[in-house]
Length: 212
Image 1 (cartoon, helix red, strand yellow):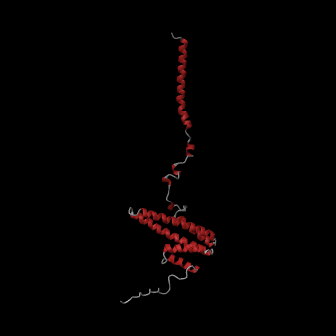
Image 2 (cartoon, one colour):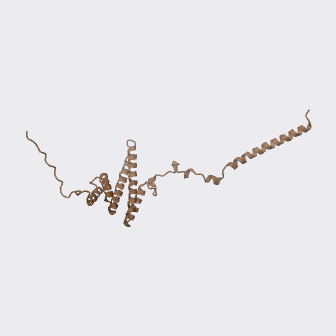
Image 3 (cartoon, rainbow, N blue to C red):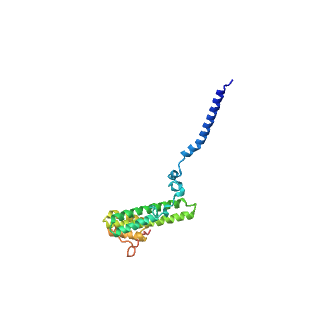
């Protein structure tokens, strides 16, 4: 026999349990929403467009005027060096030209490596990168020549001579820049024979022959 008081108590407990379950069910979405960051907090996170490691956000350095590892960056340094030379600030000029020389040398090496990588695969890409390697090597030698002249103005021939010899090795003595570099060596007294010679080149000595 079940007492009426017990039945009332069970009904009351059931209603309380159902109410608690309903309350918990309604609170769960609210708690989940409260745990989610707001829109303003999401904007503080790094987005793909601002992520420097995102390959879609990278641009070739050669097209960026403010990039040092580019032809434009090297040329800008040479222009700044020319301004420093005009003001007889040879220390700054030497620094700018040294940086420019290093940039062009790196670019020449990189283009040469790319040209070699595409050899036998894509002749157009191979030739294009080899052409760029030659052009940047020419810019490197021009920056090197100006740097050697700056060292001469600083009365530092010990720094100028190695640079001039590097130019001759790169350009060959018969090219214009190679001739200028050799003339500088002649003026410094490092060499004593002009090139090219004004007179005809001496003919080789005749070989002796023995009649049997």
